[in-house]
Image (cartoon, protein in one colour):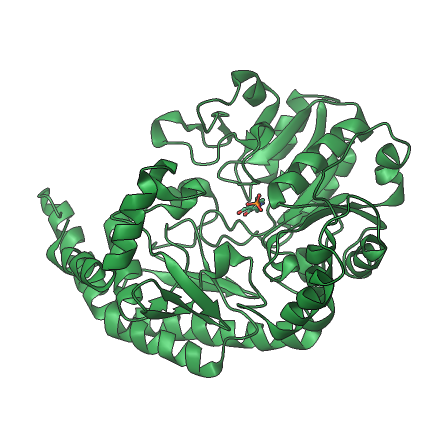
Length: 461
Ligand SMILES: Cc1ncc(COP(=O)(O)O)c(C=O)c1O
């Protein structure tokens, strides 16, 4: 660990003793002290006291401009008044029935008006949406295999827990990545049904289809890979996937859990002008409440309508979260809001880019819709393997230096990206840029030193 990084970590520990204490206590009863593995980072994660608008406070009362926003689930920002109003009203009328109540139709109408779909079903998390989409594709096609991208994340369920973050020694051929089960406890047989392709490589996908004739039920893809920071599809790539899936009789599933309520009014389908067979939605469509959906044509959904495929859940269409989501669609995810947030994001990306160039940091900034990231790479990342080699210490230095100055630039870990909410302001973006301008020279200096040390073959840390 180099001195400038150590200094930021020391500052973090000095500023956040209550988080350290809370984490140490939580570790006694909760594995790694957090409710979801992603939330842990060393030395310990910030514990949150509260959040409002575009900001949160930690247990020590430090305030942060929040661009974590629950891993991009809060395009609405914290406690959006329209969402709060809808929820408070709904709370008085009963929170859970396990019976239909009419809001499911209203929400399905909202989704089908924006996305290329005629029917929708609901669940509580993005994982449920992708899990049932894969089942739907298998039920419709009568086939077993699925294709996913190396580095693609679609939730925690077994069928797709393959090649999420494979290590270098496990990679295999760059054009035909080895499927690698990504957690203990996932059956090896799961990987046998999951084929893996590199992102932005249509030839590799074509070959998988040819090698597995009439066996592939679906191809699932994040339209912008946002579990490797921020990786845009090449021009025409998603259209190419659309054509290949059609040609080979497989369902094309766009996992819009991250892009659906953040990239554009009609999500990535509208942004890239592409029509998948099944769209998965989650995160930001709930305005801070846990809801997800998968949507498709009437013909595809017929396997559920005719009761050949089973989809169920006690908490599905819970009226409180349905009310939150309806308010989110109608009053938060408006065309004006997307214009506003995209404008703030362009300003942030452009600002980062200018600072990066000014201080000579080897990096770039990229973004679209409400999301973006500082990419500590010399060239544009086009797939998982491009993303894999990053200076982890330098990225850690960036994150803690920003956090120590009141900016949660993004969720912790370099596979994530920032989110901007409708409640962020021009002033928040300016503050973010001011802090990055303060931090960037030290990053550039550390980067140069570490590269020089590497060239000389001495240890940089
Ligand atoms: C693209 C994508 N799909 C699915 C999921 C799973 O969603 P959830 O965490 O709500 O289960 C995530 C979560 O980050 C995601 O990024």
